[in-house]
Length: 85
Image (cartoon, rainbow, N blue to C red; front, side, top):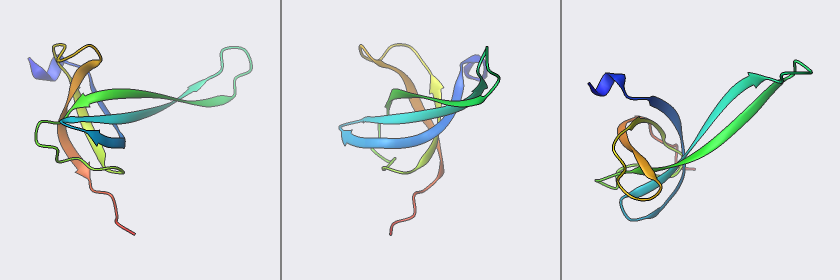
């Protein structure tokens, strides 16, 4: 059943909240009139129970029931850790 829910891959842009992160998803699409490739991004608030994801990490998020007013996704897996400079 979980495989049927929408899964997205994005970058963590904020981890300042408790058990919540903000993930930015970027996708490329063609402009309907001019045909130029345009990058569109959208931010999602995501539930992170263990506070494991940090800023800059690449994560896979999965859709779930509403957890709060704006949270409808949870962290399924941390794909790549951010490199600390």
